[in-house]
Amino acid sequence: MHGTGGNERDLVPLGHDLDPDASLLSPRGKVLEHGMPRFFRRLSEGVFDLEDLKTRTHELADFVIAAADHYKIDNRKIVAVGYSNGANIAASILLLRPETLSAAVLFRAMVPLVPKTTPSLNSKRIWIGSGAHDPIIPASSTKELVELLRSAGADVTIRFFQVGHELTANDIDLAREWLRDFN
Ligand code: MLT
Image 1: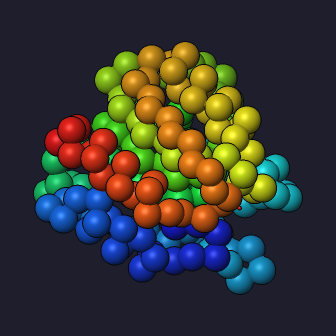
Image 2 (image 1 turned 90 degrees about the horizontal axis):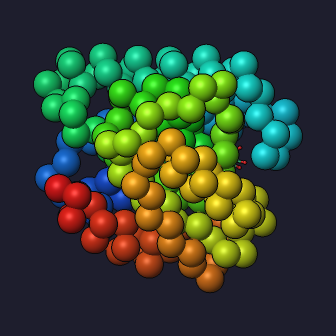
């Protein structure tokens, strides 16, 4: 899932790079912010419209399940890959619809919402890449997400890079290695 202002084509090369054998499903965020696609509405930077976020999370989870069925993709091996806004909705799917995913690779993610009941993420593996100098998603927000996911039982690997919000080759290399061990 792409970041704010991106589209469904952005991360397809990244998907191939992470796992050349994987089937890729790349949706476009359905919300527009001044013409820029996103996966859910926000009130300001880092302040989310929680009702819209919940609705969009369920809508996207339903879409993934229906698409996996349609394309005959093994629904026990679905890995979400997201950057920024796309990573945040992937985290939201983990928290609200954990059955949708078996693993996730989240580049520059924060806590999207705190669910009323803690989900069971016992069998989930999650890799998170954080920019130590990210002005949009401070490392502290990413650490809160790690704590939330771990408290729900997930196996979380967190890597900090001495960069900002941008995605780097280092992120991709380490995520690819992690995914290879997972497969
Ligand atoms: C969000 O809105 O999901 C985060 O602030 C990241 C972004 O700017 O897209």
